[in-house]
Image 1 (tube, rainbow, N blue to C red):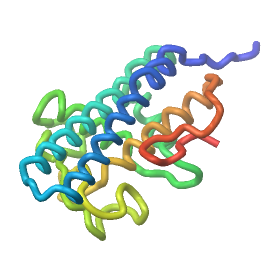
Image 2 (cartoon, rainbow, N blue to C red):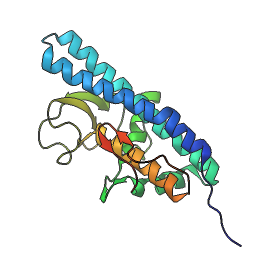
Image 3 (cartoon, rainbow, N blue to C red):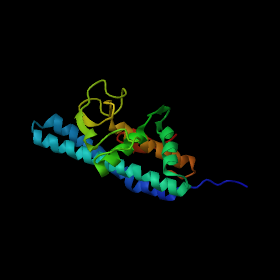
Length: 200
């Protein structure tokens, strides 16, 4: 008997209808944050731009995290197993961003609940999602913005991670899963915050 892989129609529809537009909104907010700090000496405007970037970051995190439940239902597997399946798929070309889906889920749950006590979450609260000056030495080379202010996660151990690449790589992981499951994808490229995340 030939096994025909499910095509995850609900998961795919949610990704293209809600997740990618939320990522575009987040990109616009990050651009506005950059502009506010480059062009405006007004601390109040800069603070508002930072708050908007954090909100948009958390909104896209919630949208990405919502894919877990939909895919688990369509594939008839447990939610923890779905998370474990997505994590190693969060790669662009040959580079894997380890833990991207876990950090995105942490930001989503912090936004929804405020404080987090589950061991699986790498952050403790919504206060660990902040807009700050990244500078050099935070996260990997060439990830996120090259300079200036962007949304950063501060992990429980004090380590910091840029959120832009977490979003890019998490979405790349979901696209890779859709491709594996035989879901038709549009022609490349699929741009997320300036990076082609299409699963080649």
